[in-house]
Image (cartoon, rainbow, N blue to C red; front, side, top):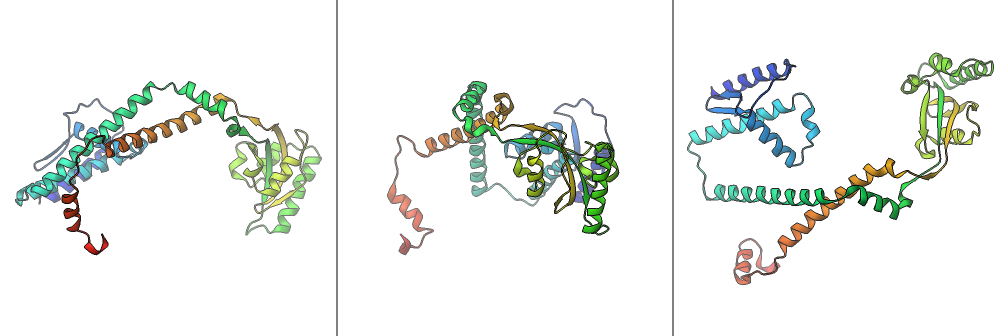
Length: 306
């Protein structure tokens, strides 16, 4: 009966959450849900969300509607079943107490590592470090030659075979030669829905970004405004217009700074965590009772394997 009440309560809360748009000021002591002896407060959920983030769940996940209510349901389930266990006389035995102590130590360990890494990261001049990395490895920040094009695509499909598509693209080419507006023909003829709002523009790209026949034709054009002959790809037939060119060269520092900083921060975070773990695993002074350790190991391992 208690579980049915809990499920009904959560169903009601889920309905209210999903149908309430306006936010209100809430404090940690404000109650979100009660069922039987279980109470879940705003503070409970804030702690629970932070714990999930600390365990690696991306913070962005909680910006999705419904995630927090589902997490509340999880916490409710844990507490309801824990209460049922108490009612049935389930107690904290030696093994459970040991596990609780280890979990406490794990939490302390995680907090120490997190705080130590965060302190070191905060002391670092990331702009200066990124600039140093950029100057030392400029070869890693090269931009290949790029072109910007617009195109009109006549697709080959179930409704239009290859011969019909070729005839249609030839019709487009003839209209362009007669002076029709490229942008107007994009709207009338192009089957590339992704570029229609951009008047057929695909922006800048490097050679390997497009299928080879398309890329070859785009990079073969010499003057901005040039139009290609019909080009066949696996998508159908294209007429391409050259809109701009960028020569190969080194990317400006400001363009790559944030990417460099993100890479450096990830590397430092990993290195510091590894360093702290190795230091903990290799204490300078320790006493080891090898005889007792061997006896313990023999409780689990076949002696013939040792």
